[in-house]
Image (cartoon, rainbow, N blue to C red; front, top):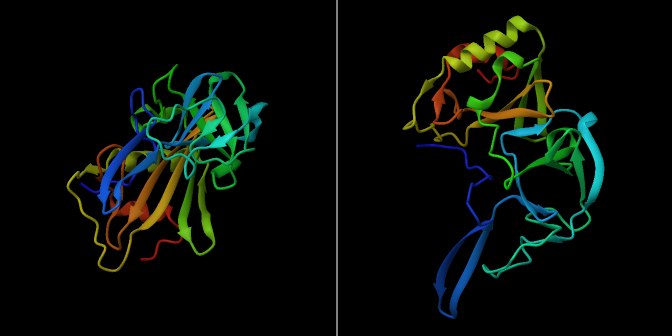
Length: 238
């Protein structure tokens, strides 16, 4: 089954997975860090399927990252402490999100709308899978083309109810195909991102890919989309 590798890994009680391999000089431990933030004694995990919907939701600055563990910690027994972050450098600003005490935002120039968002793994379950999205509350949908020569490019925005409903129906009608293998004979698939806005601070974000003949996405298992999805992608190569 072909699935896009996700950064958010749900692990109970641990923040990393380790893999050991022997070398002529002994063993070497590799730590694959989950995208996490430790703050006020709680564990926050990155929301892979979500982005900050608007900067207006950003509250007070609560502090800054004190230590980046990736590339600096090789001990699998390391105990995380307040101010630790997996991938953000020391000094990165951390903000509350107004009205949502179990969410935090970290300034990030590489993330849509300028922030990466985190949820308290101690206080709530992950709530941003596609099945969790309230489709009837979606007010705007944006499409982005990823990994272009110019970086991430916004290519379309859908505000009208009729076009939103049409797109949501296309997604609903997609056919699960967990054993699907994309055609990579001509290179990697094209990567797109669909962002669904409601009146909540976190917009829902899901990937869409095109291998030259087939559009597919990952609401859970890999699913194949009908050809009509092409009409929503203005830079469609066909």
